[in-house]
Length: 579
Ligand code: SF4
Ligand code: FES
Image 1 (cartoon, rainbow, N blue to C red):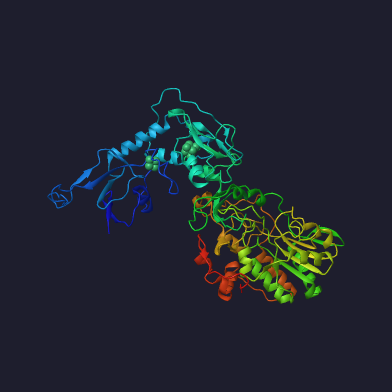
Image 2: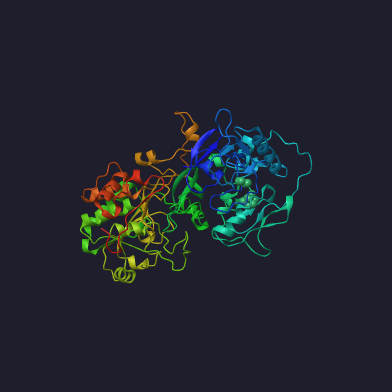
């Protein structure tokens, strides 16, 4: 197998590889700005310089020339090389800044050049704390500045489009943003204007940067030149915790981080998963974070004699159980949800079974033509595939709508959906029907008809599993606390920077903005017990999912351990054959 030696350590490698990416894969840190593994390599930042040599060969014999110790004589290239462009070759010897003063000096000098016209406004920059330029300047840059002249001024606060704002003075002209629109999203909306120290990225005159993936340029910009118009100046990176999870805007199940401060989600950014969304996230996945903060419920409500009043959880459970007990099972409609987790839908099927009602159905939320054959799908729910695999079929909207309208149901039990908002029926059609509703936001249009309204935890507050359109089962974890948080949620909650660096006696968690809601996997067993049915999962959703994956062939292998952070691809199940 061919070998390459970096700073005296020899590595074997296979196939064609670039030196920078190879080093990064081995955990060898090399400073760089313009290189991105998903795009072409312009080698314009010059930060990744290394010293590269090859064993000297005798021109006549072709043999490797060896020194007195029998080691190959290495002939180094006369110039330092940009490691992002160098192809690995058998026998190559590389010196990084760790073993070469020449490389170390070149990297320092290069950073000095990059900073000559940089405004050095880190204290007010959104990127501070996670800025490659800031981090690399600290690690490899010069101490202080020798630049005593007036800096070149360029446009500031330029609204490139509805979601991205440019500060051209911070730009180091790495062209990652323009290459993204040329090569990845293919909108070709950005280009570099002007030359030399005056250049910066911009749209064509009269054009706006409204690419549906425009906010990815913010993530890949290695400085604070491109910032989110929405998130600018809202929070510093070190004030927030980030939790690995997935987005629920559509059926892709794109991997993401939820960024939270004081139990409020402030932004959503992509998390690399080469099997799902690679490095990217559509803008529409990012801008839905307000749904986790705004119009959230303030605890359960029950309705008697047409008056809905605030209640407590015990009364609400009892009310829901008594509605189940008093209704004719054949006149109960259970609606599962493609927004809810597999675990929650599974418990609903068990409850319907215990009551003797028909199996739950779910409401599809399809917007024909909304998808783009990439990360945006026509299906606006994250778990239709999970429902199908549980045997929960879509409702026949016309049939069920007319049955509700003609009063054929005594009770409609809705898990985390909104039949009125979805157009399945009018609110008036439910006037004589009892409704048990698990819901997320007070904007839910079915809420006005709910006999028992049970606030449900959202994806950022619960533990559970979603199955995306390709059959990949993925876990979600709580990113923020709710009221009365239980042990399972506490154990799954990620720590934030303050938790990690505090003492065991510090309590950094914040009681502000905690919503009075519960995960449906906690609500459903409480109602089932009061109804008189067995539903006991003391270990919570992990135990539920263990049961699902062992008893349902369509989920085989989907344990929490197997899903980990990247999910697990389930065996294909033919449509209509889910068990
Ligand atoms: S704005 Fe950022 S990503 Fe675009 S060229 Fe400048 S530094 Fe690079
Ligand atoms: S990363 Fe190699 S030149 Fe920019």
